Each structure stands twice: as C-alpha cells, then as structure tokens.
Length: 370
Image (cartoon, rainbow, N blue to C red; front, side, top):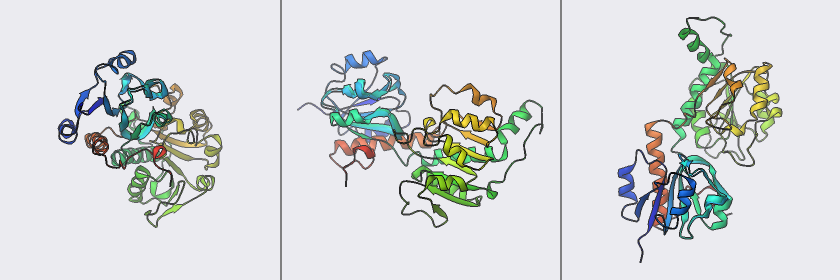
C-alpha cells in the first residue's frame, strides 16, 4: 500500500518540529516548491501525485492563487481534506473546494487537484482564498483555525479603538513632523462611548472582554443568534439597524462570504450617529469602502481604524488623505504566538483527518446539517 502523503502548501515558519511530531508518524510530508500556478498544475500528476491532505497558508496564493473551483477541480481524487491555517476561509471555493506562487485556491485550481486529495487544512481564520463550493463538489473537506487568532486580532482592534477615539495616529505624525498638538480635534474617552460589536464569535467575544476593561459605557452586539456564554453586560440586539442607531463605535468581526459583502453599507453607516467611529479587523469587503469614504469626507464619521482592505495589498489612496483614520497593513495575526498557534492548529486538523477522527474546525459550510 502506498504511503499517505500530505502537501505543505505555503509557509510553515514556527511549527516545523510540531509537524514532524504530529504528522510525521502518519504521513510523508511533501513541501510545495511550485513557483507558479502552471507549474503547480503540472506537478499535481508527478511530484504531488497521491497526496491525501493539504496544509494551506494564504502565502501560497502568491504563487498558485486562491483555491477556487478551477483549482479544486484539478486536485487529485485522493485529496479529501484541506486544512486551512486561519479562521476565515474566503480564499477557498466552498461550492467547488499558496498564494505567493500558485495564487488562490479557486475553482480552476481545485478542479485540477488529484482525486486522492481529501482534505485541505488551511492556516488562517479567514478562508476567502478557497472556493468552498468547488471543494464540496469534489468531496474535499476544509478546515480553518478559529481561536488561534483571537488574541492577536482582538488586541489589534483594541489599538485601533484607542487610536481612533484619542486621535493618537494624528498626534504621532504631528510630533514626528515637529507640529506638536497642531490641528488635533477634541478626542473621546472610550469610557464615555457605547460600543457595538458586529459578530460575537471568538475574536468579537475576546475583544468585548478587553474593551470592558475601560469600561465602555455600554457594550452591544449583533450576531445571527445570541451567544450562549455571553457575559451579562453584553447586550444582544437581534436587529442590526437598531444596534447601529444606539452605538458610538462599531467594531466588525464577521467572516467574509456572499452574505456579508457590504454588510456595512451606506444605509448602515448613515444609521449610526453623526460623529461615530468604525473599526474593521475582519475583511475589507465587509464594508462598502466608497460609502465609508463619503461618510469621512462629509464628517458623518468622526474617525475610523482599519486593518483590512478590499484589494489587499492595494489601499485606496483616498484613505491616506484622512488624518483621522488609523491604517495598519493587516497586522491582526502578526505575532509569533498567533502564527505558531495557527500553524499548530492547522496541523492538528490535518492530524485528526489522517487518524480518521472528526475535525472540529471544519468550515461551517461543510458541516453536516442538523
């Protein structure tokens, strides 16, 4: 019987020894060396023939692109699982089911995977680089890494909240330019403001606990359903619009999918009070960026803090013109602890698949319907 093989697709920086210990006894580990999407397709029938599972990091998209339907359809029939390193998985075509060389895992790539591929273990919270529909059509499982990114992303949101409320981003630029306090608008104490959290999952829940330390005046949240273990001070609002009308600060923590694209649109932004603040550490496309810019231009929004953008790494040049907007280059998970935790969790998902165990981090689109 041929040995089980798994493909490491993208960077594995912090957990090399963990990979040897967790996966080594169960399967042969094959590092992806493809420098382009075309080369990756060719090597699916040679170097990578017979792979069963794939560990995937978003950095692989620079080479082979996202795991869209095209890619998923080309995976070997042996592939049954994609273990994504990350909580979001919008780079995977779920309907079909890394980026630096081969691009995203879109339908084109997934369609070319060998039939042996049964799992993709993605390293990341967001999985928008994988076409989940394409994976589903091929019978390939996909997992991501929720939880591992909670602390890093929540502390990023907390920084953006403080910077936006207190105008610290402007103040730092001023002092570097020798301007001292020139042109600073009156700032806000977070404790005087009501916070609204859109998406009370792992990251949103952790952020709520951090923000509670100020304390915020009130903390409200909107999710599809009330969170069972939410603290009593977190007020659930089943109606998003009603929550938006009552808050001073909106922090976004929802995954990107077809239902959440432009979830925060012109109407939502204008429902918020004049002088409100928006924080986004989720995905750039969750906000209608042009609506956000208009609200900053006409003063409806007091400030914003952004760690994510619709077309990363490109950033809309208009955003650079707003001194009251704090901008970060998607730093949410850029800590040693988060990166190691994500790698280990993705490898753990791959290990569970190889051992025939249920994979708890299976993306929700591929979970059995109750």
